[in-house]
Length: 443
Ligand SMILES: [Zn+2]
Image (tube, rainbow, N blue to C red):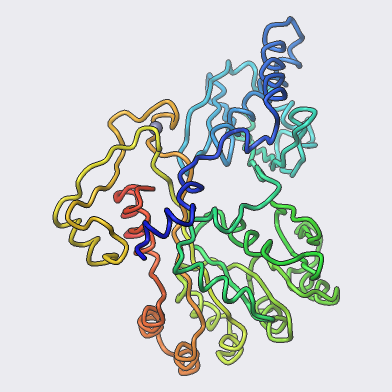
């Protein structure tokens, strides 16, 4: 079956192409949404004092940021203006500018929101809060303030938009990767690693995998920083980095809690790595993350952390390496015929998955973009993956201290679909542009 037929039949296509709406975000009924809009209008029109206006301004900024799926809100004083901009899919979008005279009240209000000291103007401050936007909606934010030469600059990170992680099928995992993942989720013990080079929505994949387990029948415990999702019956522990208690110590304590499945936020050091691996070969399933460039690179990273290759091979089940990038705006993307050289290359790499090889159509951005994507051509995100399975041959090579190239060749031989090819398939499926993929993966 070719990929397109598979997708059409499985219905995955529908899920993938429908963008998430603000209703998903808020999970409110229409009536609630209407009253949300009218709340804003009332507060804009009535003659309330300045404080109330500031509260409304700031709520308005947060709502707009949520609408645009921004990850951060920057409130920046300059010489004569107070600028507000959002980071959306790694790009900045200018939102509004306010008179610089309002800087005091803006920053003071944000400090009150974030339980920070209002009278402290010399030191940086930050705090995580659960902010009540409306009676029916609260969101998790991390508020950070730092003094600049003009005044204090504030960055609000939006930590949690959904309380529930997305379903595995919503994560753009192609069938060839999904088969391997599902197979190993049946294992009784072992380690599963999710890796990426920079920030790329790591927790989403990990938590979607974790929520595949029955939390009522297993003791699932996590060590996180920060806690982003909340899965019913899962024991989420927020690591407190301000107290003098090392990450490895947290893990040691957690292991005394009779866990079945453990999620360790990040393997940062040799001690944590050794403990996590030990746990995974003594009957626990351990999920964790590492910052590395590729699945194969992860094995080398573990070797560099002085983990015995024998322990690596007996604990690792699979490594899922991922990148998160921008999805073409479905409202303004335009079809074009790929030129011959590009066509040949794509067909050479992923021929099995292309239906119409002669007439390969791809999509790119339109000249001007549209209102829906704020003229940025891209909206929402798409993930690229590669999944490396631990096979007998791979084990042999690791035990022989094979180099990265040898491991890479073996991984592909064992049917690992390299991340670049996964990305090309997503180009062929019209989810993102070739230029975007080249930008991310060939740089
Ligand atoms: Zn658009």
